[in-house]
Image (cartoon, rainbow, N blue to C red; front, side, top):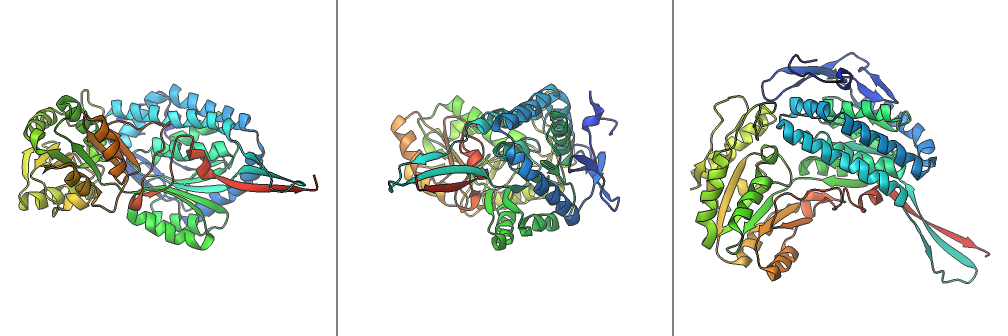
Length: 488
């Protein structure tokens, strides 16, 4: 264990893949280093598995799926509930592991653990509420019955920016439905996944129900999941580019697909908005996780009548943000996950300022060095800038001025993406009008923080397929079967 990572229960820091109920090293003994992005320190050396290990995990999941599907919903619910309780009992350690490997502030990490457990808790209940139908038969001697049955083995591929919650949001509904899982976590953040595996083991999941395979060769591992006929569903959160690849690779075996892909979220502030509410909402949306979320506001459109006041109020708040190691007291923004992400922010700022954008606050690498970046507000943004069409994935608020409502809607919709959108207004009729006009899977008014296990999460257009969470989430892991009984 890293000297700077002190856990109440050191056994939660697992470093081997979890296959068929056992933590196991890569057959060749290979490992890869997991580093703290705040200081570059190696936290742990983790098993560097590959495609063959994914295949072994699929074997285990396929063997386990029949007996797991045969358990009652009440039994599955009880085990999920135990997993939820264990996560809450170990929240401090789970948050510490998350902050160490991902970098977000500790308080924010604890918030993610609570968000993650909310899906386990929710789907522990939904397991017991899966219902079919008895249809009115068109024939006097036949009965029509509709069943919902688990789809079977599913493959899950999760990102680094929410290394706990993206796992529970995908695994919980599948397990609740009676499916079994093979999960590949992001190579930057495998430790949160393995800690969840250890708690799942303690909760009593039978071997083979949850399998977590760590490794650096993500393309080969993903291709193995997609090519295997026994894997009947793929669920993925990540870039649109990779989502397209997974769709193509899954085509030959006709898999069910759930994709939560890139975003380019607009945030619109109308003249009649509450200024304080709009600024607070913009900060909550834009700067959470250092802007490294797929639903954070990437383009802020501010109506001309409120523009200058909004810029001044936002810049004042942003300039006060404390940047640093996530374990430091009072820190609200940690480091960017890696150099690639840092370089993209630099590239977007350089392009914007070259095209007339003005940095009001921030706009430079932070004095702490490494991949820390100053929280930034930039005005004068235009549609020819890279940050209009590309997701910055960093703490940069780019502000565009507009005059008419229809202009803001047109600009907001001028993207291939359609995940989340935000706007602020006190006009009730405008709330309904704009909500319906924005081409996004989630449209949020007068708040910047909304994620919950109760609401369906997902996008349209190039932002993905399917929905996670909510009462709809478990259906993504079910097949509908029609039973026709004749001679009755």
